[in-house]
Length: 385
Image (cartoon, rainbow, N blue to C red; front, side, top):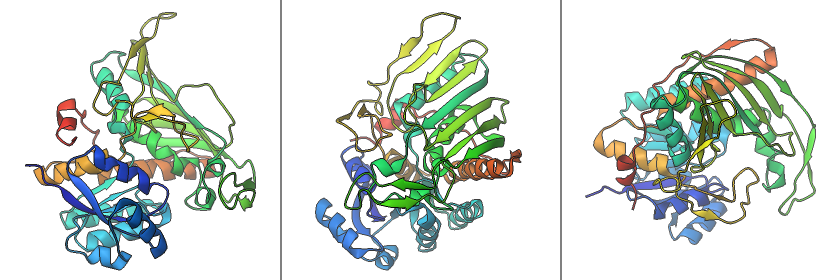
């Protein structure tokens, strides 16, 4: 019989709704209590989802809670995760795991010492789109991957978020911290760890206008660069050019393109779970489509206009699978895929990109990780209802 882990959620903001939706897909975790630094937010969340609102201190001490789901703002991720681990709770955190690499290292060290699991979003790379691409790459469909391109570019979070200031804050703001985790985790899942980065940055506007909510029309300060361009050098000798920007109104480029010596592959949106993968093996040839809408984590479950400007209105969204997969691995004493070493390595890439762009020089990546194993349909079905 499947064990159901009791989860305590800390941080009842914008993203919490997505994880509550995960209840209906996964069979091994249940959010039973919530907390927020603003207790009114916790009470509202508790009322909406029929659970109990408690204080942050109480949820950390609660012996009934086995896993803390940390959905706080990025600058609070380290502090909350550390307290959870020190209170002998496994922890699963929204991205990034921290905003400083040294803090990420400390979390991994504490988790190892206390024999606890630490997991981290994004878990979108476990979806049908990225896993189908991984399967094709591992079957040598396009040969050795030599180079590629990734792009995330849109006008910015201020258009759809009522409180966008954290995305433009000095230390935890900008497109690399915001959307970089999706793209970089997807790349590490496909190519393995990175070894070096370099880049440049642009600071386009000093102020942005909130486009939604009670503060609509209010001008806010932009305290961080809003575009990063550059190159990532991977240990397997693949070279990837990247564009990560809050300054582009529209573009018509593919999210991820990888070019091998036998052909090319188009990888779907790493911010979502589904989407088709395409390969082409001949100059001027047709692109072969590999649909993922019949894969367990590729089936379309969104058919409405997205409130998030950077999410597809028709796609697959199974956020929470990383938490479910971690719970399964806790029970079965296995290594989970959204693990601390992977998250730390991605954080190292993020911070190195930002530093390299600021200083105008190449920066070596000091951390590494194992490439995650392919997430088979057989394994996925074990955690699905």
